[in-house]
Image (tube, rainbow, N blue to C red; front, side):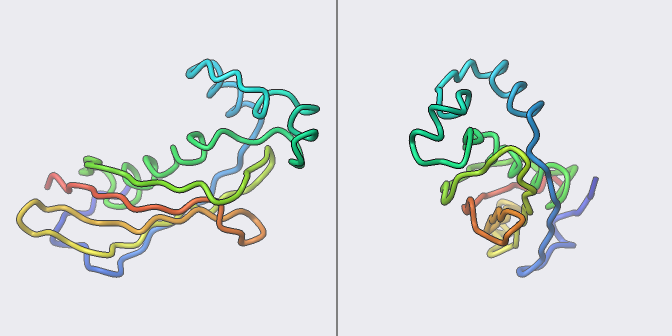
Length: 138
């Protein structure tokens, strides 16, 4: 876990990590949210809709932005203020995601970072992008 302090972070600073989507993550997300939509839970239904298989929950994918802020940028001293997220392409079980953030702006008065967010799959296709503001508490 990173422990960046506000003064140590510059505009352009980047951090990234990878995560693999597996069946267990899907099961845990279903158990937590009770989102039983068949697009995420019924292979035949998803195929009938033109997808390659069950589509991973968009907010499961977006949840990795929390990991980005809380573990990587800035890490331990983060407090997420707000997040804007777009879902750009479906994600499937077995996909390896690359999650990255780059500091686009700093607000010294509030010790707040604005991060540009991006998630791509193993083929380099953008599956999500967004923007997050994070307060650095130290």
